[in-house]
Image 1 (tube, rainbow over the protein chains, first blue to last red):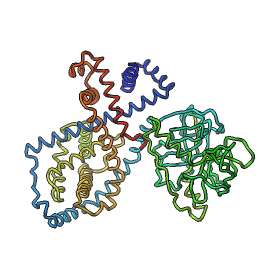
Image 2: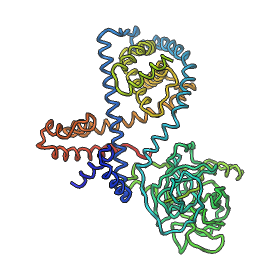
Image 3: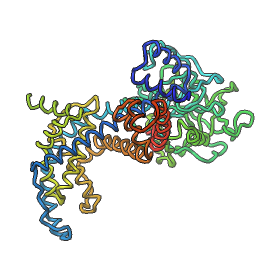
Image 4: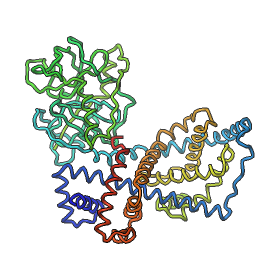
Length: 370
Length: 188
């Protein structure tokens, strides 16, 4: 009974049938309960789809009726095809002629088409994404780990919101899914900044405090989806002494920083089997930055939680990223998210410099706000 | 300028499901498509199906807030129909070379891609509704599609009162949402 009432209220809320006072009360409830907020967003998405379905169905019906009555009134006379379908050769020659006619239209159609497309496509994606972004808003707070304070900047961060933590992150799926550390996201909202300094809105989708990994999704019309991720997520444990390198945003000025080192132990802090110990100069802002081996495979994610000797850091193993993706399937709210992890790295160029030039396009600075 | 305004009016009419506008579109442009399809290995019925599909595509396009008319409706309908028809020929194996050429690829990647997404969402909702069974399907269609009141639905479906109808509607809705979201991919 309670559920029915809740849904009824959500429907009234969405259709604007609530009084101003009720509306304000409902907004408060939404803010307090992530579950209810999620229900509202999901139901809105559903009702929008339903509405689109109904309207389109009506148009199809009208179109059909109009056609039938015009046809009955003798508006058009069907020309029966002269060639029976078995005479293939005849059909072919007939068809070729048609193509020639079609092709002559081609040129000018192309010009107009590209204009339409130019005008339409970016904003289309935007509205679609915006709507969807809300549907996957799963917000979990993380108070355990340490991040670092950021200076205030003019951003896509909503007004009145305060930047409270930040770090690095990287794409694992061209659709805009980014992995970072859970402790980087101390706030309940996030933006990411690419290596060119462009800011993009992002949603926190999943956060695993135990393994210190979190998943973000870029939800921004300005996001340009790359063709493919150049690095595979390594599914095996890496070797001791392996040469590694990283790219991250440890500085406040958002410049990407390259670091080189080696894998110093196959387990992490106090024998933790889910992480590596690495020898690399890691600053706090490196949190969430990827670790690559010389084959260009992604083998881990820096997580600098323990304050230790200079140059010693820890990295969450890449196998834990796979666990995160698997865990999404178990949750009702995230089970429809389809992330495809790259299985093969594109052959790394011999020149580290050009390799980095390519990789930095997949690296993001992450900032979290409240 | 006047012609342009007329076209805008037609599109607005299509968006609002105005049968006058739909009729004008058929009268002005169907013959062109009929000739194209009939001259390219198709029948009158094929032309009818293709044109209907193109009308839906145009409708979906007009629905978008950002829609701007940058070419004549005629041009637009023709290019959509042409694409759809070549695709169908290709599927039937009557046209073996790939749909190539720059014009086609721009179309496929951008415009039709978006319309195909809408087609997919429509098909998912359609399947979900149709697998609900009665009276759920009609009840939900009555409420959400035809915007009937609970009282009216209660008497139509023989429920003793509006509350009973509401209960039933709730159960049906939960089933529909489950069916819909099982296939509708939020992440994509």
